[in-house]
Image (cartoon, rainbow, N blue to C red):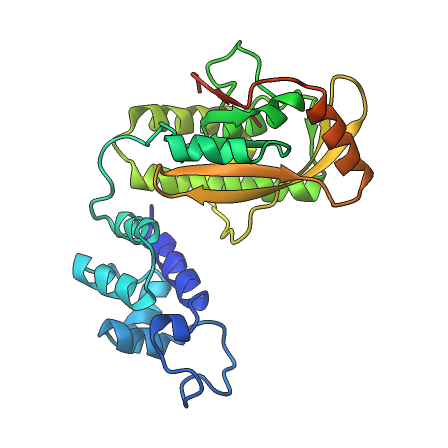
Length: 289
């Protein structure tokens, strides 16, 4: 990772931090008549105890901050633990030790049960699916038990796409960018996870689009996942995906919904009602796409 990656991350966080969220008074001289998004460089510099020129050089990839400065910037921006760990890793300091958490707790599994009529599944931070609900299985989009990567979302999307799930070009591009960006962050946070490193190596060697996104990552602020699911009985169901964080377990929940009152919603309801499958299925191997 280069200093330009660190600079881009700091700039993105600064531009997406509201002055009020950083503790600046609302309605004062600092927050009235603003022409920039988020915090100004001068404001971040003052809050972090450095100069505005230092922030400018840092964002341009021309300064490597000390661990203390990284902490001061993170505190000034009031970022969460994950963003703080990512900044540390980009600056070359210690990231999270150990392995990517891969176990779904009871509360996370109950979350899937609550979405009884809505397709949903849980993944770890490396996009390995750990559990799915009955509505997801009813769609017929589950992975076949043939490949070690069948239950990894990134692998299925970049290297082994199946005909039962289709996306328009613009949605496919957005979805791929999200997958690669989040996997890259996970890779930075868990440098000692051998299984994660192996997955990334296989993705980069197998998929040119993934390797391109890995080498020239895009800043992603939204999760884009509109897809058409082709049910085995025939016909397609268009669903929109939402990504929910499950911080206690370090997991992500992907929830798929149809437009209210649409033919897709009626078809989804019919498919789920007639499926008769279990409420939740724990997945014992490594991601659906």
